[in-house]
Length: 207
Length: 207
DNA sequence: AATTCTCTGTTGCAATTGCAACTATTTCGA
DNA sequence: TCGAAATAGTTGCAATTGCAACAGAGAATT
Image (cartoon, rainbow over all chains, first blue to last red; front, side, top):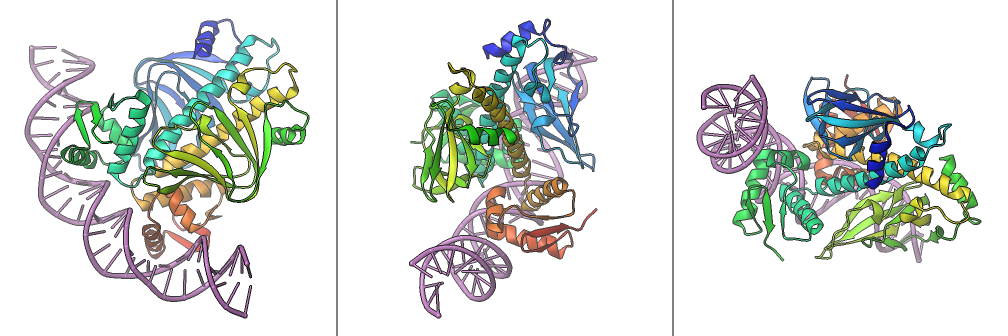
């Protein structure tokens, strides 16, 4: 993402229609409002996308890291719940409107060209992440979800041993299964000799 | 998608690096090969993305319609299975390589600018579809999956009554649940007065 | 018009999962 | 450095789900 680095470094002397803001942990970064077509890019830090449903239940829908692209422009916003992005650490976020990508500004600055290319690249990468998650979520048992996800991590690292990118609690959320049921299944997989595990390090023992 | 129409109509006198091909039902459109960075756009017709795993099991991973964008550039391709796109009806498909989006051709034709903007727009729309699917798949019970999906369809149509966009068999695939278990749950929802249903038409009876 | 194929609908049963309710351990902030 | 969160780990039990195996209705193909 050299392109994004370029953007960050040149943000000051760029068009006024794109903004960079800094947030402290626990601050509200944005709320998804239909038809606003807002696009956000996480430059540094982390945040959670949170849904409050009508019963007031809180639900972590997504998690964002550096270079992640998000915002209501990417999301099916429907009326009966509110989606809010909350900083889980201090962070810097870039804001722009989707329309801005299609219209050239008067100055015709290099910024636009670079920005469009970057957004496309970030979006493509985002799509790959989403497809990964869909592939995993579409498995029907916890065992299959775990093994599918492990196999993806393994082939990404070119190694039978790899580090989980988050805590076991968060892994259960990512797989959308009950944490205790997932722990049970991890134990089964270990006892049956499919994997071994110490902390967040997993080793695949088959094939 | 006027942009895409423009592309289709001007495909003949465009760069040679983008191709339009016609396929008959059941023909192989493409196979996902790592690092090829191929992008495909379905101009007309329908196709299935199919995975063959090591045991030879066949699995429909995704379904594509008009204006859908797909290809290995969007997908986490890992070594132990093959992903193939098969036409489920006669169709026209546009092929290009991802790099092509970033590099201007010598002629500097209008084609490039339009194409990049279109691809970005198609990708954004694709992302919204994916987020919808993730939202639905991340519900833990069949009942919740159904109600979540119904609620999205309902708010999209601005109506408590709406048509399912596919057969009940395909709905079960989309929700990634056993079809018979889903039928059972649909019956429960009907008996308990949450919905009514005739054919593919669903009516929400609550709130 | 007959046949094949796909889709809908149903049910019993076994396996899997979520839920609740704990304890132990680690991390983090005041 | 002490206490509070967050994380990891465990288990019994009830509810949900997948699976297998049907039958019938509708489409599509020849």
